[in-house]
Structure formats: structure tokens, C-alpha cells
Image 1 (cartoon, one colour):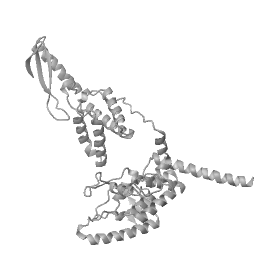
Image 2: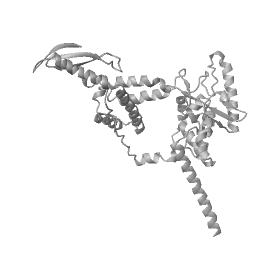
Image 3: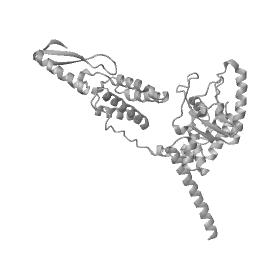
Amino acid sequence: MHFREVKLKKGKVIEAQSDTLKDPVSGKRRQISARGKSKKEAKANLEKKLKEIEEFGLLTGTTSNTTFAELASSWLDANKNNLKISAHRSQIYHVKRFGKYIANIQVNKISRAMYQNVIKKMQKDGYSRNTIVNAHTCAKKIFLYAIINNIIKESPADFAVIPKKLLTVEEIEANEVEEKYLEHEELKEFLSLVEDRGLINDLEMFYLLSFTGMRIGELCALKESDLNVFIKEISISKTIYNIDGKMHEYELLTPKTEKSIRTISIDPKIVEMLIRHMKRQKERKMAMRDEWHDANFLFTRDNGFPLSPRFVHHRLKRYNKWTTFEKNLHPHIFRHTHTSMLAEAKASLPAIMKRLGHSDGRITTQIYTHVTKKMQSQVDDGLSKIINSIL
């Protein structure tokens, strides 16, 4: 403990200073101080503060100058090893979105009103409600981390409200269930375009997506050994992570959930298509020899490296200019299309969920309900025609 004399307008006071707990974010030494009219009073006031810190672990006021950016960085680093790299990258993205408004503000100076204002600004700046919700979720965890590390007593994220976006008529119409999947004629038109205008791998990739319902990351991670041509099944046990689409920077990860690990049957025609595809790929491999990235992937670039989801997405986008229907083509539309096919084939919802590899899918349930209702309507119409012809 050190003492010094401080001159104020009202006169002189004695200030006592002492080191205390290190900052949990920066790791730097922290000091606290207390003043009094005498050395004895200053010491007593400082000892009271030290006792409070020892008892509650709290550093309040100007002594805790950790900014939101520093705290967020520490939280991200602390949780990095507990997450898949894809989930960690997602957290970095959402923390950055939220933090741009309060990055340099001290954590203990961020009020509930300030926090709520950040959410309002995000909405005003055009961020989707989903992005705001995810950013809010990360921010809540960051402020909880601040409480655990004795930087603040309570979280400004408590009781924050995420405003609901009022949809326009156009947005409501665009969100109709039919927009989420391709009707039979639309899928037929698309696949005909792929046959006529498709680039290498396109036909096999989009047939497989359409008639298996697998996710794009699962498709890109497939290896030839995952395909059993004898029993006409394909095993899905991994997904690919390649956020930037860079050829050499891919990672194979476990699927989205445990339910995603599955084996699904495939049509004999698609099996034959894939056998021809693998034969052509083997010829390419032999031609490239030492330059080929020999990792046994089912769909590859010209040198054997796997395709990235971004690569497939761009491949798909080129067909938008040729289709006669207005629906926007994206890899997930085939997953939804497969759901509609299974519903029409009278598969149960649990069976569909199992084939798609998830235990709870809102859109899957929505499409299933819509298709089955439409089928029931067709049955009712057919029955009415029969009754009218008899009566």
C-alpha cells in the first residue's frame, strides 16, 4: 500500500493505493485507490474496498476499464476449443455485427438503454431479425462472461427486446410455402437445362441433391467409399467446412447433429449415373497423376480437391437466367423439393425427418403439411366428381 498527498480545490487529501486482482481479459495488473482526510482514514477506506473485492470479486467504477471489444475477444478465445470451427466463425461474425456500435465503450458503462439502442440501430441499418437475434445471443453470453469474471454486477442484456419486423404484402407472398420447393414440372425443366447446359459434375450433383435431400455441405464431403453401388445406398457421416471457398483450406467436420449421421437409399438410375461419373473421374485422375489431390472425393475440381458449397452455389445460380419459373435457385431448395416428393409418396413425417437427417425442421413440417393438405383437397375434389356423377 502506498500513500500520496493530493491537492484539491477544497484542500489537501491523502490517497492510498494498492494492487489488486489482475484484469481477466488483458491480464494486466490493476490498482485501486481510496482517499481520506488523513492517512488512517484513507487506509481504512482502501481496506474496505479491498475487502469488498476479496468477498465479491468486483472492480467497479474507473478501475475496471475493459472495453466490449476486449471482453468479446477474450470470450471468443475462451470458447474456441469447445466449438466446431464453423460455429466459432459464426460467433465471430455476429459479435462483429453487434460490437461495431459499442466496441470501444467500457463494459461497466454499457447500460440497458444503450444495449437496447444497439438492437434498434441494427434493425434500422437493415440487419435481418435472424442476424439480430444471433448477435443478441452472443452478446448475452459475453456479458455473462463479464459477470463471472467480476467485471460487472449485472448484465445490460437482461430484458432486452428484439422487435418484430412487420412484413409487407410482397414479403408475405414471397414467403408462401410453394416458393420453398420446386413443383414437378419446375424440377423437370431445371434438370433438362442441366442436361443441355450443365458443366462437369452438374448433372450428378443436382440429381443427387434433388432425390436424396442431403445438405450441400454433406454432398461436397462425400467420398467414393460412401457410395455402396451393390445395395444402392449412400452413407452420410460428415460435412465440409470451407467458408472462403479456397481450394486448399477445407476441413471435414462431423455433421450438423447426431441425427444427420445416416444411410439413405438411392434410385438405381442415379447409382448408374454415379458409376459413370466415377469412371470418368478415374480417367481424369490417371491423366493428372502426381498433380491430383487423391483424397477419394466423389465430386472434385480439376485437380482432385473437393468442391466447396460456395462453388456449387455459384454453379447453380447460372441457371436462373434460363428458367421460365420465378423461383430463386439455391442448394437448399432441392432439400425442400425432396420433402415434397416424400410427402406425395405418402411417407410419414418421422420417416421424412429421418431421411433428411434432423429431428426438428420447421420448414420440413410446413411443406409436409401443405402437400398433404393439397393431396387431401385433390381427393375431396375427385370424390365430389364421382358423387355428382352418381346422384
